[in-house]
Length: 81
Picture 1 (cartoon, rainbow, N blue to C red):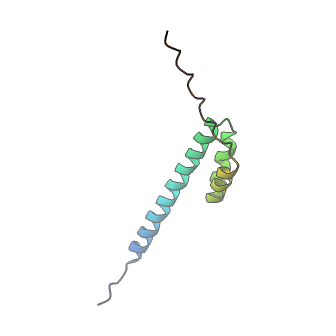
Picture 2 (picture 1 turned 90 degrees about the vertical axis):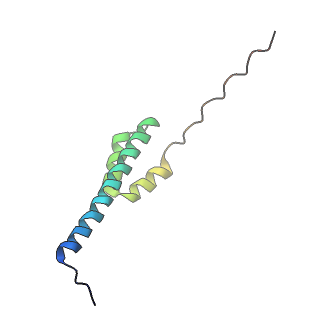
Picture 3 (picture 1 turned 90 degrees about the horizontal axis):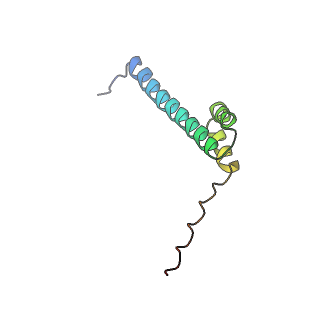
């Protein structure tokens, strides 16, 4: 026996999927903003790039962002004496 899908089920499913995509898109944009700010880049510009272009903007950001410099090693301990 075939189950009949009601229109509200289809619309509801689409709405949930779009809401999840939108939330992930915003979270990615916020992450890019924070990461760009931490690295000393123009955070607002990168935020707008990711918001306007989506995953393509994220890929571009990941390719061209400055490499994070590792913290310098701690100085050696003083000699005993």
